[in-house]
Image 1 (cartoon, rainbow, N blue to C red):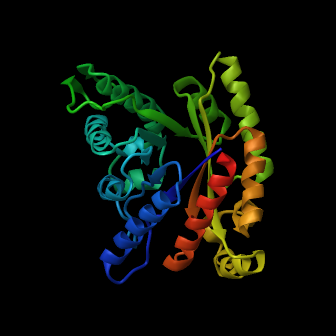
Image 2: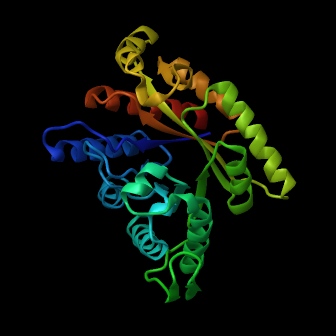
Length: 301
């Protein structure tokens, strides 16, 4: 089981430099804790500060010199040539391999950005195909959505870009099994729902003769010195309907309790957990990341 961080990009701060500093400090702590990978998310047209993924992960690489890293990109919101160029550059900056986490995106963001999201499934597949061809050094002509003619990029990634596709619905799981060897399960899944989803993903892979390399799940986490402390800190977030996620899908407790939950996910067949801090308090977030490092070490021993 590999354990990494999906660093929150949303902070309600008076000074925007504070939010960026929090993300950098969390990346530094995650590296010092020995975690396996580092990610940031993708969201747009937000009423409060949301730090954009490409510049933030580039800055965070100063704290993360040689391990796998990446970002979530909602592909229909991005021009594939522009995004392929940015990822090629990020892959050249980092010392570890780049992992692209990708999804369809929220139709409401598309409306605000002038994109016809009724075509997002087709745009997703076409965009991913175009980027993979560009990363391999091809010159691409494609008129499905972007009217590309002799498009190419440089620098090329120094190694193959790994792709994890986010999927929960059956049609999306089938798409993932067809297009990628990496799957990312949603943080909203309870344990029983995660068990059902990974079984459906395994079946979809078998039906297509695919052997999945990565079965990852994102989890929102808060770890305290003991169960009571952790749940006391988490309670206000739960009462405020934290991210619309069911409380049963959150990882909250002592280091031993969270380690047990991660072990149960490993028994289901998950290979990776991408942890995201529940708390916005920086001290508490750093404490959770440090505990995750100890848990990760216990799985490696």
